[in-house]
Length: 78
Picture 1 (cartoon, rainbow, N blue to C red):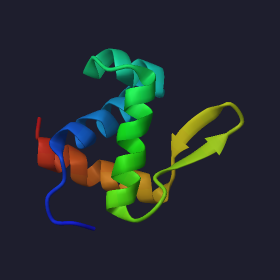
Picture 2 (cartoon, one colour):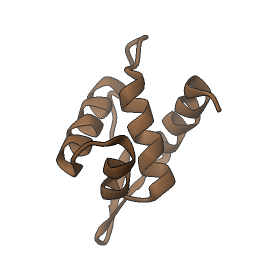
Picture 3 (tube, rainbow, N blue to C red):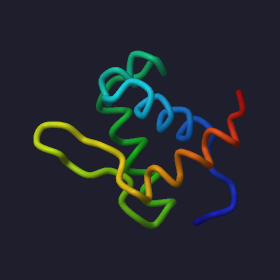
């Protein structure tokens, strides 16, 4: 993983975790759902691994995504 992560990508990851959906996160970060999806594809590319898994019609963080989420919350602070 590269040393410098874009904080916008991390904020979007946190928003997805907090709202439970890409659509809810899009509203929170003032982007379209497709822009959120593109941001997460970019973050997965930087991380070098998948961060989400499909559960029926829902998309959830996988173990790698949850690990990165912990780091993102620390980086972004309260």
